Length: 114
Ligand SMILES: [Zn+2]
Image 1 (cartoon, rainbow, N blue to C red):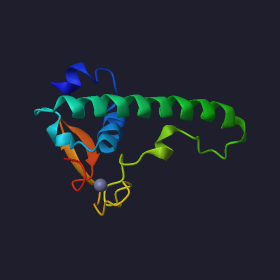
Image 2 (image 1 turned 180 degrees about the horizontal axis):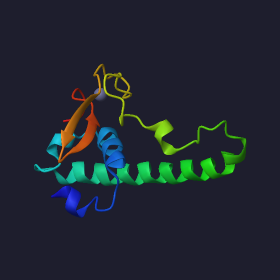
Image 3 (image 1 turned 45 degrees about the vertical axis):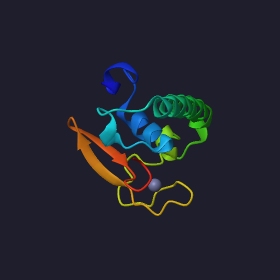
Image 4 (image 1 turned 90 degrees about the vertical axis):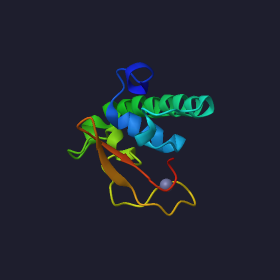
């Protein structure tokens, strides 16, 4: 299973974000994912993690002047905790939905994530 091997140790939030960017439905994690899709997913996971690290860095720098709201990576989430909001992919008219997998909340766009 994908989440046992490829994304071991990766937070559920980041998996949601990467799947959305790669336009792969989280409901297919345990199903067959083609090699090109897997490459896309790995690439997006790296992007998401790099952004998380960058956001963490800016959080530390901005900490003293913050108004109580820390600039965590969650500010740039595209799908996580955004059920009911429009999909951020250009040209997509989908609405983000929340599903529960293995007791964890997962968010995706049913329109462009297949
Ligand atoms: Zn979409």
